[in-house]
Image (cartoon, rainbow, N blue to C red; front, side):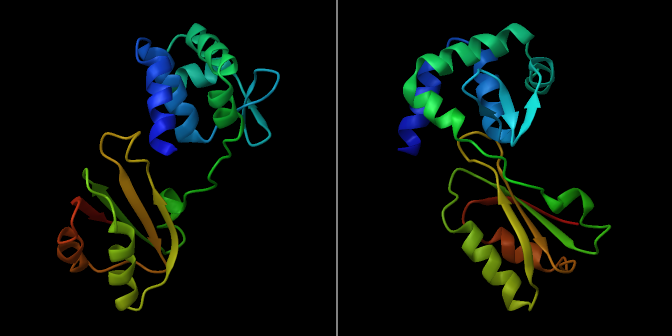
Length: 171
């Protein structure tokens, strides 16, 4: 179903890069399309101008993207049911004395989260949050893990041994 939906999105927008960027940005940010054709993040209405700026497109691309989505029942079902993922603690982790691990993922991503969390738990460190970017949407998807305390740098080499991990940063 997921692959089919991405194929449908690509099919609908492949000739229109600006519209594709709008659709991708809506998914990335958790923006949904309401019955009245307006875009929301939760219950907060997002202006066409704000989304156009975020997607780096002309505002007219927003309306045309919405029109295409509304004409296709499957796409409308997808985009009307998106919900935002919530707050990612990455940018405030230092203020909260938490650790941040960013793992860049290659084309093989199966099992990376499981292996990573196992290594962290073996060090007796709790995990506060994990956020994985979509491997279909991002060119270089990141797995971001927020830990209860900063993680020592010696784990970098262990993380790099996991199949599919291409880069690791610890903050």
